[in-house]
Image (cartoon, rainbow, N blue to C red):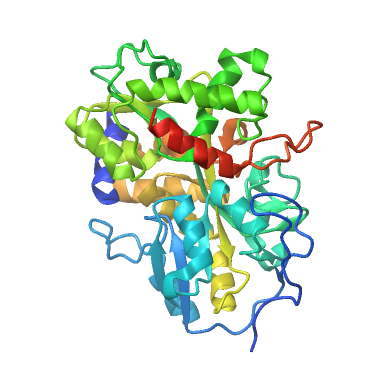
Length: 420
């Protein structure tokens, strides 16, 4: 990476701190985390907008220019001005928290959320979100191939039984971040985090979520092929047990896991963490005060493709549908990409991101779009290589049938792993 782009990244890091439009069918889930949806509630038209919109989102996904250092990033105010929908947002730190908020509300009836794959499949199966008619959203034609509902090969986190549940937003990898002064040579494998004889034992960090079991399964795909793992989210009992055993052994060399992304940033800055799984925004912020870089290891990476989904019981469905359309626009996704550090699902947003980077930071900054930090925006081969988060369900998706381990057991075992 050239000096100009690295300098720009430091700059970026400082910035980063009755017309109910629906059908008449009810959603009838056949199970909590898996199974066919017999009759999905479908939103098939957009009527007159209401006066407000209640969202659940990842931090950084709903910016109105009031975040510290982010005065130039505002895709909320123009939406409010155009539609009359006043946006209110509640931020979730984990997918599990978002699922709970959607189902319990805490006094608020939420209209929708930005869901990662380990939340979206649960919400679909639980009947918490409605399907949409893709023809309402012209930008679907520009959605990158693997995520496109029409023939996409990596879209099962939001396309189920032929129904489309939401509009694609941002995606990115969970790559390997490391301290460039202490971790030498630069790592090429996840072995520096999973093997108990790692020279960095005691300074390793991992993502604190049951879905991280998939990262161990992905590692075993490469290092123990006799297990026959082909999908890190579709694990038989033997495959699942092997991944859990690997993580229990790893727990002894982990300094501490992180769930709140700033905890990992702090760990790399104070030197207690030297290597571990990370998100792009973690890298952008950590490199402000620490010598860090990131790689895609030889075994590959897990990752996330986030989708705006509408509640099956939305109080403001037209505002939510308008918001979903708004967030598919390439200019909006470009703003999110520059602020957050991710790839827009709309391929046109990749060029828009390049233009915006040059506008903000000068010549050379546009090169960042073609790095792992930005998910190599628009690169179909790279996106297809990411094992995108999805909710583990009993149906293995192949001729094994319903013998795979459900997410509820992933959650139970993660508690055991953390106590190992």
